Image 1 (cartoon, rainbow, N blue to C red):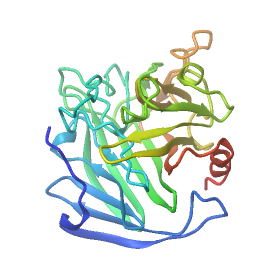
Image 2 (cartoon, rainbow, N blue to C red; image 1 turned 180 degrees about the vertical axis):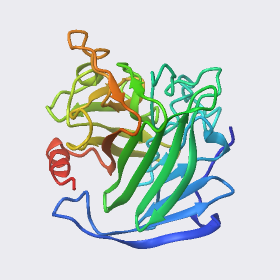
Image 3 (cartoon, helix red, strand yellow; image 1 turned 30 degrees about the horizontal axis):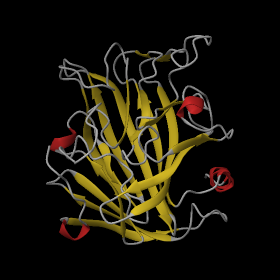
Image 4 (cartoon, rainbow, N blue to C red; image 1 turned 30 degrees about the vertical axis):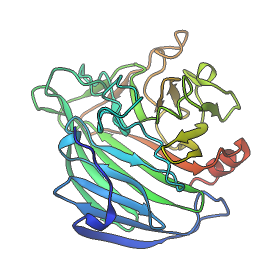
Length: 322
C-alpha cells in the first residue's frame, strides 16, 4: 500500500466549513470550526477541526476490505493510530494483524462470514455513497460475502467536533438485514476499534488503560463491561514526545450497553456490543438475530485529547454526551 497524507489544501472539492455549537459546560464540546472536504479521486473525506487535521474517512483503493478513519490525530498533532498496513516499512513498527487498519468498524461471524479478519475470499464491506451535512458525514455501506451477496447494510452517521485540547467523533451506526435473516455470533473479534500507535500501546509502549470503574491495565480492563475505556500515554515522534489520551465512550442508547472491551496490551483497542460468552465463559451465549428488515443500532464516541487527562475529566465528558 502507498503512503497517504491527509493534506487539506490539495483536495479537490470543498464541502463544508462551519461552527460547531457548544453544548453544556464540558470541554469535550467547545465551539470549533469543522471542515469536511471530499477528494473523489483519492476516495477520502478529509476532516479538520479548528484548522487542524483530525482524520479522514477513507474508502479508496487501499481500503477495499472496509472503509476506515485514517489518520487519527490529536490537537497537538500526535498521530495516535498505527501506520501499518497503510504505510509499510515504518522503522520499528509492528506488522501483525494487517486487518487492524487505523480506526474501523467490523465484526466476525455474520451468517458464517468473517468480516473482521481478512481471509482469502472476496468478502468485504463496500462503501456505496456518502453525503455531508454540516459537521456530519453519513455513509452507506454493504457487507458482502464471498459470493458478493449483501448480508448486512450499514448506515454510518459520524459527527465531528472539538477544539482546545480535544477532538471527537460520534459514530451512530445502524445495521440492517435487507434480504435474508442475519445471525451474528458470540465472538471477541469486534467491533468498534482503533489500532494504536506502537509507542502508545501498553506492552512495549507508554500507555495504560483505565475504565469507568477505575480498573487499570489491559489485564484488568479486557473482557469486562464498562461505559467507557481510555488509554493514557505518550506518542513518540521524530521531533518530540507528546502526551495523549484516547477514549472510547459507549452511548447508553446503543445495543447491549455497556459493551465488553477487547482492549489488548499489543495495541488493539475495541468495544464489542455483540460478544459476551467469548469474554466471560460463565455468561450465557449471546447471538444477535435480525429478521429481514430489522436493524440494530450501536453508538460510540472516539475522543482524542492532548495530555494524560484525569479520570474525573473523562467521567465529566462522558456525562456530557448528547
